[in-house]
Length: 376
Figure (cartoon, rainbow, N blue to C red):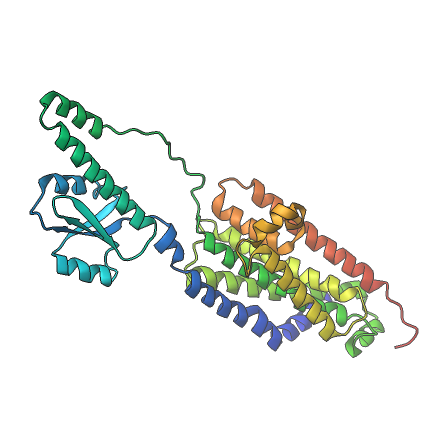
């Protein structure tokens, strides 16, 4: 009987248009919009890469300048990607955004950029330091001994800061929107779990009335329905993660298997939440659907789906809420997989999700099984 109910519930759920729309099509569309909006911001404006710059030598070929530019344009940590051009070629390249700036040598270096930003600031500081060093060397040129000391001082590197990576993972801050998208898909699963409660309460649906007079134990019926719902939710979560990673190219590190596992557990949280919400009052299916949708969107909003800084604001004013907000916990678990080398924070998040799932199912059972009706 369990298997029969399981197959029936699975077929019914997979034929649902709402499931296809809200759990598959909508996340794919929203994820695509996220990619179009945030896809290149991190690579272009935040993540450092070689700065393409055009050099115009109006004062003739300067061996010293060329040697300096060669020194900082080679190696794995090269600062510049230098191209020597005429003035007209350089202006065209800057206009076409092929280079970030133009360094012009008229005896003294000058810089031309088309916009402000970190790359423009780096080029500006390079030009300022080069001109300053040339001036210092020029003033010491009359005294060979002094010139020797100045040259030694200028060629010496002073390391006052030690670079240390806090993480070897993906630090793209915009990927949090995709983590929240996965959390939203999981919590939208509450709409599938909602049907389990409705269809097992005799005062809310005709199907529920028939099941109440059926000889099949209600616990068996509910468990088989929950199992089918978890399977449907797993399919939706796998599709979402696969599209986000392989379709949109979002970096999920080298723990993709754990991403799938986490998303499946997250889907169970959403389905069990819907089961719980559907069992606590006598409202209609449409009303409870609206409640589940509103609650899911609110939790995702507070986790940063619409505003990336919202989760931090919540942490500053009510840090306890992020620990019980299912959307925030799901995002934290995915974030931990991509950032931290150990599993301490991840394990804590997964344990929290499992506890939430067990609690929602337990409460849903209590409210659903203890219903008695004078007549049906």
